[in-house]
Length: 575
Image (cartoon, rainbow, N blue to C red; front, side, top):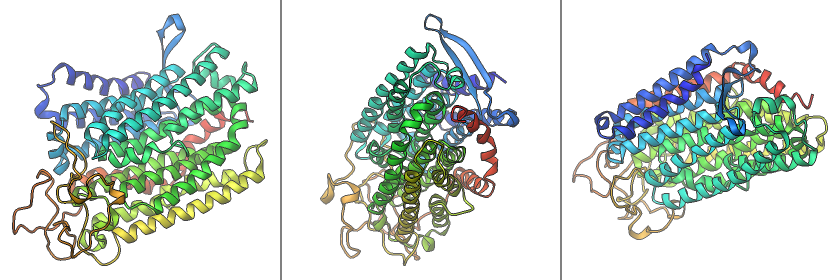
């Protein structure tokens, strides 16, 4: 089945090219065009998983190895193993669900108004880069796909983002490009010392031909580039702004897939190719990981904006992933790979929910939502509660196993690593897990629990979810709080004349602006309608994520049995 990796890349790429060649022909069908192409890509990913030989999960399968640049001995080398397969399917699934989100309801109306052809093109090119990163088995090819995703994500944030989209997109591109330059230097150092860029051959050699000092230098350079994308504290500062300003689809793909590209690089390149460098840097990697765990949790406790809180939670969750890698043990790395997939599912669902809440109330400011969502919107409140307790690591849900295995790996790290130090990391990580539960409980107490009160969120002319129409850019935050970030805007008292017309009470009340009405318009006088609970297209987009969170939580062996053989091969140098 060597044609499957090529088909996974060809379908979205050809779909994007068609949009360039016939820009007007497909315009009436754009809302289903992207959905159809992403659905075909998802079907191919499922076929790849169905034909995968799970008894040989450590070996590269569905391999494609063709000359690319013969003069430099570069090859177009693609393949899949037990480490990359779950991430490929996750990428195809989340992209498809993003198109589902865009095809119905208020999201579709905003989509049709906001450069629809450009949006579909951007998402398809983004999918090519994401899937290609997980398929690539050549270092330079990996780097090319790794960089491809930066351009569409930059435009996704910069064009369809929120009020601060320009600053957020520039910060995103500068951080990631700087990290990529450092990573490229590390890759070139490996090439000059080994004479090859083939990941499969380099992994089998386990660092042969490279002195320890060279391995350490290369690991640090490659690790910095990967850490920026992960992101690892203190290289994380681009992430909260990017998530806060990105549209729902951008936040879902950024958290669900792009962050995984950084952690995947540690498993595919840094650790197996540079084992001595990994052994030397592991204590430092573990230190940065646990600081990120605690820092992310404390930052979440200080947030008012729901999307910004979820963004900071990713810093903490990725800290557990990095701690698992730092242990250099099968248990720890298996936990890291499991947490990778679990975080993609759970945080993708959380950002879908945050987008749904912002669509209804035109704000993500938690105190301004009025609380009591379980009473006013019981289905939406229930799914938000489920996603929150999954993310905090409740046993029986997918978020538990990865973090537990990462901490267990720190209890008994690889031979040669200081056990006392990693025991300290384990204790600090456990404290971070407690703080994680704390900030999610605080979030639920603000949004889903309590007595429902009138929503006092954003000004009436605030833009909902940042999907602007074509034309000159407008600054949505006007009025008394113009120029003030959402986290810094004070809560307007309920009795104030500045309060929004949108309310969330048990009785019918003036609703948020309907999704199809442009922001800045006043609701029809006397019009009163209740806020919608979960809509049918939202149910369609969110149900697969809920099912998979339950499935991997109750049956973790389904994923661990796939990754374990590949991890044992990855750690062959240590054994």
